[in-house]
Length: 407
Image (cartoon, rainbow, N blue to C red; front, top):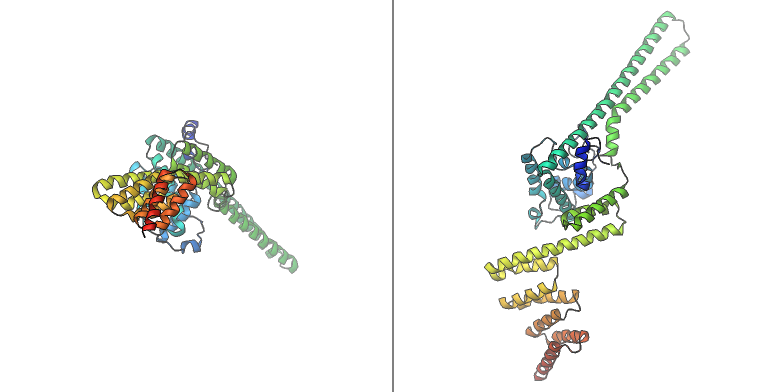
């Protein structure tokens, strides 16, 4: 549920940003509580093996559980009155802790996916807040929401104080009347005196309970909607909205944003195969994009450092085992005099793309060069099963047969 009591102009402006323009109906943090409020951390998760500090583990667990209920300022632990400089400082502080480059080579354990998701979501929120037009409108709506929330809390507290004062006055009046009656009639029945005292105690206890209930009402209502975990709308509806936002981002090829939305949808509706399939589809697209970027970086480094770029080429193939890149890597390794380095990648590519004859041919040549004739013959036989007239396989098979006779 979003806050909708701001100006119609501001709400209309934010509506064009879909879910990213929505301001939660209430702030998650309650007055007097810290960053995490009443959030209960799982001790086993905090103690699970990971190179993250305990503070970073808490941040990852909390944000990955609640980021869809936080406004963008709460996400970065900021007030809506801050300027761009403060927004950048907060985001860069988060980046130093959770940016993929800062975590590269570290064992994140069970926190790996959650940390990536949190950073992607925070990055998108940061990008919006850096837009002066969006930030000004969003800050106004957040401030209006916070003011309405504080006003409601104050009204609840005022009602609680009034109820408490009325209860105390009633109790004092009853006690005074009982005292006067006792002084005037010392000879009154002791049983009647005891009954009146018991009734007085009951009224006092009732007033005290009513007062405590009223004082807790403001925080209790907010806590039920926020830190205590009650959703203002059902999880299925929220999951659908996040999925739809993910579809829009995917169509725009905003892969990180799409993955973040689909990840939330699967968390809210883990049994929906449509959401899980969308998440896997976007992950595949992201892997392809990253593989292409790493390959391009490797080619640029190859021009300067030669075979020292091999690790980058292998990293790209790990992200996506593209057959053309596997063949290119085999050619590069041959030029560097390290043909054997490409053999495992050709074998994996042949298994992943069983009908690609070019991959099998390159693998057969690698095996022949390493004098693994039996393996080379096996690959040739596989090629001929796919295409009985394959000329390269026929020539190599004949050559290998001659080599066997000579031996």
